[in-house]
Amino acid sequence: MSLAADSKRGPMVGVFDSGFGGLTVLRALLSRIPTANYVYLGDTARLPYGAKSQATIARYAVESARFLEDRGCEYLVIACNTATALALEDIRQAVSVPVLGVIEPGAHAAKRILPEPDGDVLVLATAATVQSHAYREACAAVGLRATEVACPLLVPLVEEGWTDHRVTREVLRIYLSEALAKCAPQAVLLGCTHYPLIAVAIEETLRELGSAAVVIDSAEATAEAASVALGSNHPSGEQETSTIFQCFATDSVEKFQRLGSLFLRQPIEHVHHLDLGG
Ligand code: DGL
Image 1: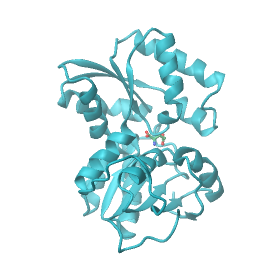
Image 2: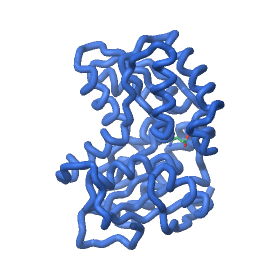
Image 3: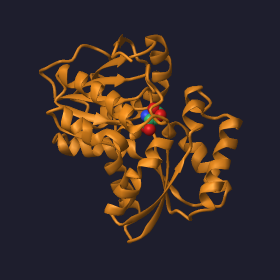
């Protein structure tokens, strides 16, 4: 349900992404912390972030985070891997509310699956995220070895709705066979908001290429970290019908409703347009 935020409910949580992909994180949050109010901002006018410089990504992400804080959000979740990788510290310095990114929870989720020291993780992400080595550092901090591979064609393919298309499968086959020539991972971490939508194709391609690696989606791990931070203890993954969220997009609201519903797996009734400038 997309309604005005209700202050008598739980905390107001801001969720930020460069576009629609972060709705996979919102979906996980809605089921894990159903009593919170959510404000989601997709900076669709300036998407993709994954091919931009650190300075530009930080400027965009800080503007978006300030908007969410000004709307009354008491806790921010940076659902965008690229913004987390390149701008988490800038965002934390720019706002006065706690900020959670997706990378640390993702690394912790991989560690839970690979408890032995020196487990090998393949991280699939945008070019900017890979160049930052944020995943490599987060994985090293929990005793995992990460190989990071940029998959720049996957975001446009998912945005085109080609989640189960032979072209997407062929592109995956090329990326994954090149990656598996460099490492033998036990886990594959989806280090981009869009990849959960092609998780099945990723898993099937891995199997075709002879890899038994477990595919990890950091959206769930991020929602779990947020629920711990917010002291919410919702036991199951079932979303309550009364869950409240508002959506803002910096580009076409019609496109956001259409594509966003795919990522959220439920209709988005209303989207507000927001102009954050260039
Ligand atoms: N949201 C971005 C991420 O998770 C992917 C889309 C983009 O490049 O902006 O890295």
